[in-house]
Each structure stands twice: as structure tokens, then as C-alpha cells.
Image 1 (tube, helix red, strand yellow):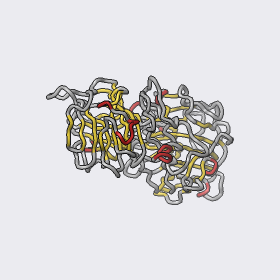
Image 2 (cartoon, rainbow, N blue to C red):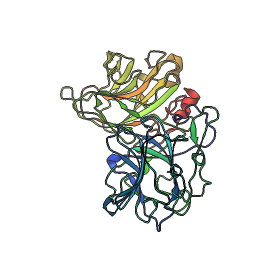
Image 3 (cartoon, rainbow, N blue to C red):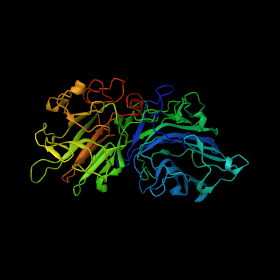
Image 4 (cartoon, rainbow, N blue to C red):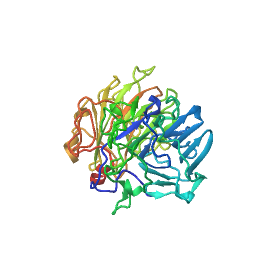
Length: 474
């Protein structure tokens, strides 16, 4: 299937998706709505874009019904981490009426995927009754294939609670960890994926198109997540969803047309850190060193990000912790904070490391709760700068170019990732801001392209690490 990486190979033309919604299982985020009356139970289309945050051992229900103590169920979900497939299922009175499980495995936590399930059980040919598409390509290989009988009624679209992001059992199970964007339900039509997306003529990448002109039907809806105060708002009508545990900060600008860096859950040194909030919140392990890098790296250009230091546990010997923030050119398993690769970190005690070389008096300590640490990474001049609460350390000037005033020199011709971790094991919480933060920003600063939401001003010439900026400056 075509790869979806948020248009990092596509110039900034055409339709743009402004927002997604960041769902976090740890805070039991979900949406629910009970229709006034049943809609069409035989003909419908589901379309949504998702960026997965976790590959878990639990299934995660994107759309679901759980009624009559589970005798009547419906789900459209991602399945467990040993398979990572799309699973479409319905049962009535404890009897399964359909199930399609894709053979395709969706395991890329850096990518946006587009899923379309098009239903018309009135069709005479069984394979035409349910059609599954991933990134614009119809799926014809399934690990489980059980098409519904002709004229079967599905459980979805009845006048009972319809759920997004959890199983309907008082909203207590199978919560999702993912970003969702452009969530559409079409009541009464079986549509092709070309109603929702198209292949880019230059790159061949599948990308979204404007869906606002579609007819959504009686119970249909379009969730664009553009109203941060009402994330369940139906942009196509009045079929609004009730918001449960989601807040304004869960509105994200990480979308299927502009993919932002996050921490990579597949790159977790010692598998010690706990990631949440769309892989932007990291809690280190009190028993092991930790080391996490981003999903996106860069080999050229100038890039800025921030980290909020939320909490820490003091070191028994020195009175400070040893959490760190920096850049690295190698993934987990090949290096740690003082490892073999090109690693440049700024530690909370004010020291810095360049590979295995320590400078003990580089800058200010930053162990206080709420401090914001910034990185300005200049890969055009191979310079690196760190800031604490907006002040660049060592009298650094990120705009000084090749002069590198106050800069740390870094090795050339490398692809660098942002990295966060803890070199002396403690339970420490940090929240990452690569442009779409998981915490409230009091000031609000964008880069020169208008991307990102940062606490402090982005240095001149530096940009948020996202696919649109990479296409232009990377």
C-alpha cells in the first residue's frame, strides 16, 4: 500500500487538514452519541485517518457498540500487537453476522493511515457487501473472512450509544492510543475512498481531499476537531458527540497533511520508559537508564523544539537528578547517554556531554518543576544550542550561523534525532513539544511558516520538525 507520512514528499498545495484529536488510554478519552432514531443499518461508510501511538497487547476500538450485556456488539478496531490488523465485526443476539480481519499489519507509529470501510449488505455478491481500503487501496487478503448474509442489519447506527475511542460498557474498556483526523460516517451510502482522498500526481502518496461537500445522511457526521472547546462537534450538521475526558489540549496540529515528530515507542532503551499523550509525555523508569528518540530525524536545516520538565526524583548522592535532553544520530540499542554514537545532551545538573566527553559547568541546572528546555539544532552549520526558559546557555546565539556564538560543535553529515532520557535511574516525567504540545502554552509562538505552538520565541531561521517544513527546508 502507498506509504503515508504526512506529505513529507508533497509540496504545500491543495487541501490541508488543520487539526486532529489526540486520544490517550491512560485518561480514558472517548466520544459518545446516542442517535434519536436508527439510521440505515445496511448501507454506510466509515472513513478516518489515524496515527497510532502504541502497539499494545490490547485491542483498541475506534468505533464500537456494546449493548445487551455484549450480546449485541459492533467494532471497528486495531487488534493486538502481535497482529496489528484492522478488525471489522458485528454480532446480534450473540451470533456473529460479519467479520473481516485484514492481513495488512499497521505497525508504523510515525505514519498516518487512511481507513475506509464501505458497507452495503443489499449487494448480491458477498465480497461487495463489505469493502475495506487502506491508503486508497482495496484490501483483498484477509486473515479472517466472514461476509454478512444479504440484507443483514449491522449494530452500528441504532438508537443506542455509539462510541468512538472505547468499548461501550459504560466507556470502560479498549480505549485507544492514537491521533484521529477527518473522522467521517456516511449514513445510507457505500462510497469509494476517492470520496475522501486521492493519489498525489507527483509523489504517488495518498492524501486527503475536502469532504465538506459530501452528503452525510440522517445520522452521518464529520469530526474535524477544529473547535478545541467542543472536540465532538459535527462539522457537517448537528450530530454532535459528547466529549469524555478530552480537553482543549488534546486538539493537535499533527495531522495527515502535516506530520509532526513524536517520541518513538519502538525505540525505547531497556524498554524502560512509559510513553503516553500521543508519545509526547515520557515517564522514565526508577530501575533502569532510559533513552528515547523521535520518529523523525533531519540531516540538514535548522530545527527547534522544547521540553517541559514536569517532575523528578532527586539523586541520593548529588541531590540532583540526571535527566537529559539533546540530539543523537543512533537509535536505542546502539548507544545510551554516554554511548558510542554522536550524542550531544544537556543534563539537568547543568552539565553537558558530547559523546563521552563531559563539560560539568556548561549551563544552568534545570531541576525545578515546570522549566522549559529548548534545543536549536543547526544542521547547515553543524552547531547546537540549548536554552532554559528562553535563555540560551553559554551566551549562545542560534542566529549566528557559521560563527556559532556559544554553540556546541556537532559532527557533520549525520542524521540527528531529538533524544530524552535519564542516565542515573529515577522516576522522572517530561513532556515534549515538537510543535504540537501535550500541555497548555501560556504565550504561543510559531515558526516563520506559522507551524508549531511553543512557549518561547523560535529563533530566526529555525522551524518545527514536521513534514511540511522538512519538504521545504530539510
